[in-house]
Image (tube, rainbow, N blue to C red):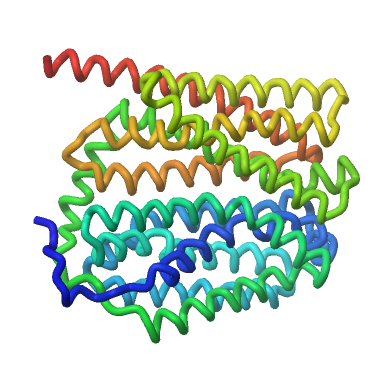
Length: 402
């Protein structure tokens, strides 16, 4: 039964919750434009530095599963502040890292801490607002999730080119410290700590979902169709700076432009969803991404790599990502309506895990553009096959029920 809101319901400032969400999403890509300069300063290879992105994604994946149950048991405020403290300390550790492996490890802990804001910001909104108002506030939270990756390369590029790559992490340290102090002063406890999280039921739900070919198909396919984009984002600074000989500032603008394709894809989905079924929209969106990735790969292999060519092909790819992201999630959580909450968390974990795996593959070899092109094309093909399997099993389930 949902909690009845009253005049005594604790008030959580919306701007503070937005800051929590923004901190986690900003931290994902803000370091990307500075990867080449950090690699030179620390004497590390491009592949080693790309692990700073890969492990950040893994940290976000792990947080998807643990923060919800932890906050039900120990309270939103204490768990959130613990995550923010970890995010803050890890940012400082990254800024002071003496060598690449220490930096990569600090990024892992930074991501796990930053994920607290992503997960619990939404939970606090649901705790403190009636359904109608919660929908409006959650819309702003989702906007923050989208804005973060788009703004991050620009902010990171400006900081790195003006003050050096370590300034990026001093900035994240300051952002985390601000959030931590403001939360301590202004954020009340919005849940009832001590709730029975019933781990056995949670594990049983996860087991049922993992045994479902339909859910696995949409989850793996959704990850391949969407978070495979992180493979290109991690390789992008080396493509633009080392292979196409552009400055860090120019590279950051290009990366921000490419990520903004997700916005266009989301807008197209909102317009087309009433005209085309979710399944068809998902498959066609991923087909567009696969085609764009294949053209990009062909251009790399034929020696026609250029800034304009890269931007055009990968922008089309990210538009497909923007269309596939909400449709894949919708299909995944529709597999079993009885466990939507568990399905949402497990889908997020699977999506980020696939993204981390794709990013690690893009770090292999000495040609970042070739590696990224191969990963994007291969992931798109896997996504199409996964969606086909999932759709077939869903139709079988519907036929059995009928």
